[in-house]
Length: 67
Image (cartoon, rainbow, N blue to C red):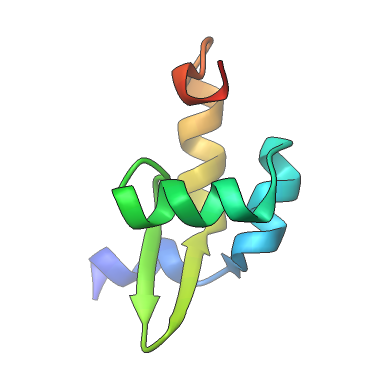
């Protein structure tokens, strides 16, 4: 249960893309490649943990995939 505690509040791929300042298509690509943190696939949908994504962003000074 503790592992799922980080997935209480989720974002869509579009919401995550907006937060990151990248396109929806790029966000899907990163999600599929495992480069976007906090992603879970449920059926045909990707959900992104808002907590894990924000935590990752706060810990990063440089986002290499945005180069």
